[in-house]
Image (tube, rainbow, N blue to C red; front, top):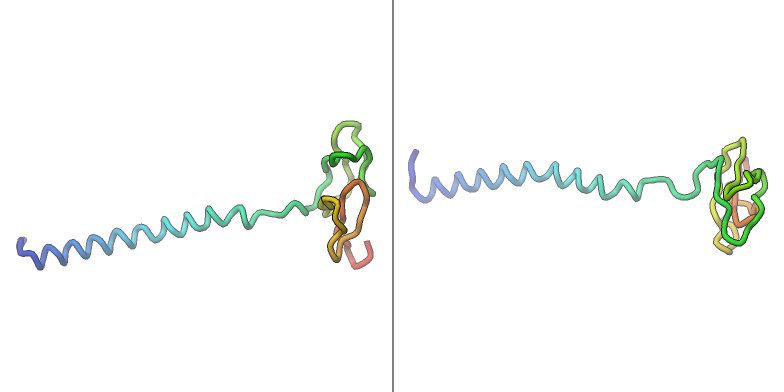
Length: 107
């Protein structure tokens, strides 16, 4: 194998290219892993069991008190805490600090 400087540089360039191509899949994997928390469901997912919010001893409409710190329902409702603010459009207030997503435009 020749040891002149030009061939050595060409070989080094090839090795550098090869290394960069191997790093691209790692970068893609890292990007996917970073994006996963952003793609996870928001707090408004269908829930049969929800926690009682601070300052509320009762359960929202459609939920039954389990005599502990949670409320349960036989039906999966999509609910989210109000945090003291009005419910968003398409949601209705069901009390105890929660909003429920309207289904069929009614309730």
